[in-house]
Length: 144
Image (cartoon, rainbow, N blue to C red; front, side, top):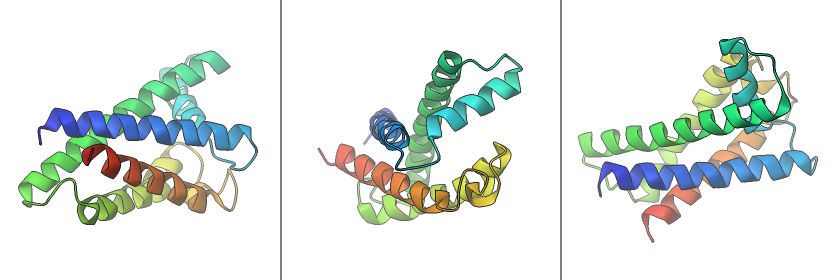
């Protein structure tokens, strides 16, 4: 498989994850909207006045770039270690690592605290579900 195929699969998976987080947040089922978190963080770095449309635009862009980069890194790791990139046994531990990175690096850097505690006590679990969605989406896209 070519790197471009992995990146496209990761983009599709990121889109599915982004839709799930938006729908879950609007339905009041989850407290952490990944698109808004990404957008608010990007806007704060740039120093622009935060407006809802701009937050979503920036959030979608950050989320898609992040998803694509996750696909590229997975490709490099799988090729370096000679792993079957389309295997759930390769994807699952990789996405589990992404989930841990989200909880202990990305959310704190974005100002949401370790495990996203500023957003709610169940954010760690919400993020687990969304990362499972990402992993299953990636696996499905790579095995079509």
